[in-house]
Length: 456
Ligand code: TRP
Figure 1: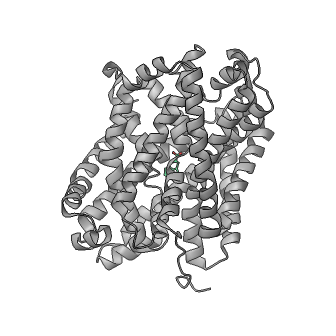
Figure 2: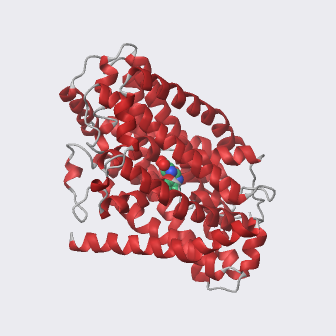
């Protein structure tokens, strides 16, 4: 029962770790958010700047977080406290861990609501509900889901239930099992659908759109959006990566793993674009219309193409899989902290925290569409959007910036070198990025987000 006596579980191989981390990174962020943000940000220009942020800012922070996790061997809070102590630094550094664990709880409370929408759409698609829908009908279908309290809460419960079920079974029996089945399925589906869509849809228009940069669309806001998206997509700063790092064994190379994770995550985002836009263009739909791209737009195409019930169902199944392998990484940080702190049984803890997050998510679910709760406005945002703003634009940049600062300036260089076991030249580049470029770039973006928010 004593805290700290429980042994940390570990991934059983380098491969399962990579799949779990890629599973965390690849999620709604890649398949739902990235395409519509690229669509709004002028396509190619957004993609270019996004690539820059992923590899120059995101990947070094990913390395920092994985190494903090592996060095600490505990929950994000426990690891930060332990390392700060070892390095003779203020215990206040554990606030990075706190912000991560709480941030993940907040994100999961609305991520699960959207996960619920994807579950509902998967069943609708397979049932042939979209058949023959025009734009108005598809919009009405989405609006109808959002306005149906029972459906929204029921699907949110189902999604959260699946997440809790996996996390309750632990690292090896739950997370690892889930990703070893689900990730290959995800890749197969993604490739299959992208090929289908390139043949059946308008590939030329897509290539033009995604790879020909229109720099006139590259405003400052689009750049902020791209940095925020790169952090969200890589699962940074909210405890997921630090927690997964704690389950890494010492023989796994962190730098190489981080590059694989970031490349796979980016590859999936681009593939998702290659899967969605050919259909969007072939059916004359609008690429830049925002968050409704998948829920209000794609069903129109699925409703017209032959075999659309199957293709659409497969597409939403892919989305469900991507979302689940991410949501488990959002539940794991708080579960690992509470089990570490209380020594309580993981199953109970997963159920309790999951139940709490589910409850927290109800209002987010009801804050969309034509519900009375949608009228509640927090600084001009619905509850779901306010949580998204708080985590994506405030907690993630601050958390990422301070993890970079901590690793770059407050952990001894020698200890970092030992943890990373990189070649000298690579280490120097990484160290330079994490000490100077990451904090300054993230800090600048954060200040401008606040400035834009305050001045409207
Ligand atoms: N990266 C996931 C996605 O793209 C979401 C996610 C999982 C996440 N864990 C996270 C985002 C931690 C931020 C922080 O959908």
